[in-house]
Length: 349
Picture (spheres, rainbow, N blue to C red):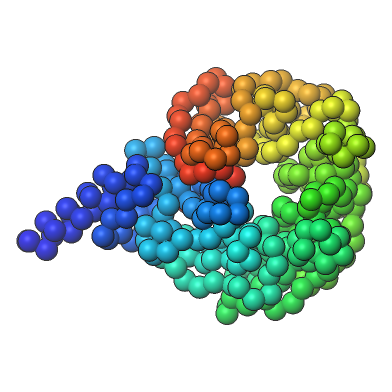
């Protein structure tokens, strides 16, 4: 009986300390992060560690820095992104040139990949034994970028696929991987199509493609356009690609000084950020810019189950926040503190 009482007390202590970023409780609860929202926080650029915030699906519990809480060590600089494959979370730590692997439900460390990656950006699992990671290499060298193919059975880089510069986010469709080349420290305008371990083809889209979604048989690519500081400013665009033949179906063009980002979807509606507003577009009748539904300068957006999840990075030096909006009313329903520079939103189910 005393052991049961002690376990209950330790469990209660863990959840009472959830809102304190720097408090590390003496124990953690296995599978404590099984259902809820995970936010990757990049952390201070160059001189600090990124971390991960957990918010339970009923919004009752917020736990900061869960990897350190469980393992007693920092992730590194910068926590760029995260992806899932089966029971594991693959945490891409950009400046530290590594991928940290943890059980996605307990966040207990499993393994790491530190050889064969160079300035890694995003992870995507392909099946139970294979994954892909985009790599910039030297961001000032446009000729050394690649996609690393991972063997997830032993967590090694099994091969690399040279690609055009600035590979970033990936989506999959029909056993193919589509890679958006935003352009690293410059700008690019390509989507790479990878089949297995081979670069099959490229698709030219608008300048600086920054986010993509697959809806039915179409790939929608949101392109930010070249920013003003390049001296060659170009308009943003939304490009629809037919995934049956990888041909462009439609290109919708924004104004020259309009640079959209953060494309996400819910049902037949697309959502994106532009100039301090979130806009909604129904794919059945696309007319830019669409309907503005929420005000805010957001760093990341994800739509899911009738809700819109948005991160605010504030001044990029202080803690940010995750805001949740009900898409039936477009009203904010929740606001949670995160770590510094919350750059990714993920759902642990």
